[in-house]
Image 1: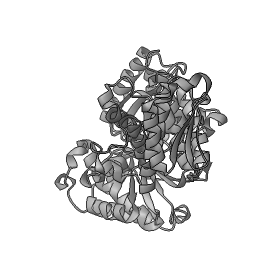
Image 2 (image 1 turned 30 degrees about the horizontal axis):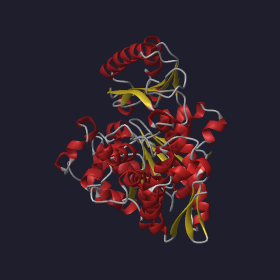
Image 3 (image 1 turned 180 degrees about the vertical axis):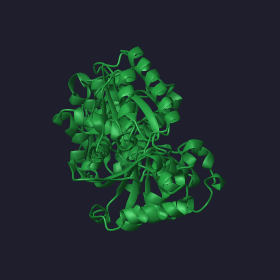
Length: 498
């Protein structure tokens, strides 16, 4: 085992955007793809397309040099397949076809010039791949264009594309933010698609919107620095956007968390988002780290794989790579299923889903020193590249595994992290953590033991069955942990032996 999931050869997406040229090499064509390599070069191909109709020559040269490097990296990493795409700048510029021919020769692969509709569809698939049952409007802001499309579950409706990308808007407005406001207001006025946003989330895709959200995250002291799934209430996002395009970005607090090339485009991204919120009236803005590239991979999966749960799939992959006996995680799922069904504790579908993920992640910190397993597991989980769960879900996963290692002691836990979870979620994390502490002391994390040692609530008693060959497992440590769990759920503990 080399620390990677066996998934055939790596695959790559080469994304020639209006602002950047990026190569992402993934571990394989998987439901929850993990990047092995990710590099972008800010070329600015689209910075003069609106005013001059051309890709700037210096930008072309910079892009072609980046493609030569990327081709060499793909060869070095033995990439099995490269999907190459080009977006608004290449499809709108008169010299776009000539650039693409040169780019294909240098990169050694066919480059698909995406139509606006195709770009919107792929962005929608990116959101579908990264959120559990999404329901709202997806907006992908690139350097050259803005794509918007309606998504509900796996259903995608017709989208639209507008020349409102950061570089394009800056170019059309002659670098005047005030003029950009008028352009955006006119472009978005009366669009039927945006009327369908009212009261639903707006999924914001694109590097400049992520930069905007990153600045908001740092200014507000948000406790979790994970961009995917970051939520800003619509009113708060509206006020923040107004601020961003009315002041010099360089004067803003914590502006240093944004790269200098991104800062010049922040006001234009803020103008677009402000007017989308004004017109569409969404409930809140959700940041998506997945978009065009991940959407392209998602469309290449089989229908069966696409329907699988991205969170559970990712948790299973981490379990396979890091746990002592990966099958034990699946034993835990069945064991806690039986416990929860008998406990009288109500559990909705989302809570059950998160519990299953916890079971798969419960042993990933075993190589760490025992005194730090809780802390290290918490950090691994809360900062992992999981998708298809919100930040409250991340907090639940991390806290449950923390409690599994450390007991129900919270002295060293960040109070800000606990704030991400509801009172109910905190209670469930404590219960699950306490249950896992019983499971691990009984099974020693070895698969095959838990099916023989069920724990259920029967006649108001929390009953652990250790019968036959398993009877010798009973001791004070097992009794102590069972007593702790029984106290948390308001039952009396009982160990049954022959």
